[in-house]
Image (tube, rainbow, N blue to C red; front, side, top):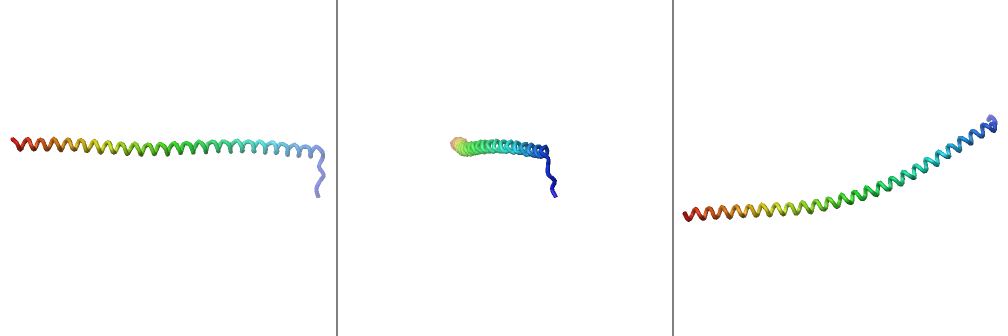
Length: 95
């Protein structure tokens, strides 16, 4: 059925098993290292998302102030134009 193995074959098998164990330890170490890297990258990504949200909030605020400025400027210019037009018409009536 099964043949007995020699001592040298047994040693070879044990050497291969030890090598595989060493490789497994190396792989586990690599996986742990990558896991740490992933966690660090996730933390950095969260920080970047928070910064982006802060910038969006600031941009909305800036946009709001800009629109108020534009509306005020248009109102001021429009009022000046209407005042000038009214004066012109009033002067023409006097002539």
